Image 1 (cartoon, rainbow, N blue to C red):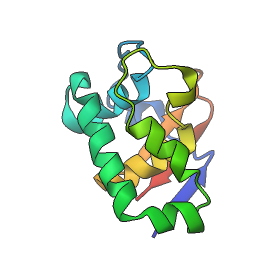
Image 2 (tube, rainbow, N blue to C red):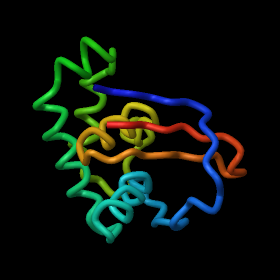
Image 3 (tube, rainbow, N blue to C red):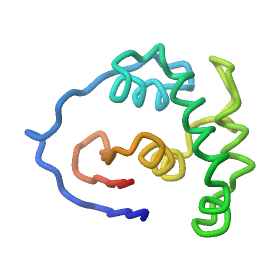
Image 4 (cartoon, one colour):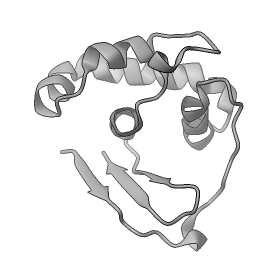
Length: 121
């Protein structure tokens, strides 16, 4: 079951770490790699796992959630380090897919730590 909770406040004290990944247009995948695999250089493994999960559950993402699965596939199958903006991380779609792929809850914050979105698997 997929759950999305928007604007849920999480205390700053609950944040384990803040990490500034390489800025090569795969930075969101690098951030997930740090959180899930402990090394930002594993960003390609994150994409590979997410693509596998998407392939297995294509109907859920396409028909139930209304995601543009063709675009998601293009993003997840792009291995270019300095990719064009058309292959950048789709914030809500990619985060939800990552939460489901790795069976983790993910919170994202704005840079002022005033707004948060939570994604649950």
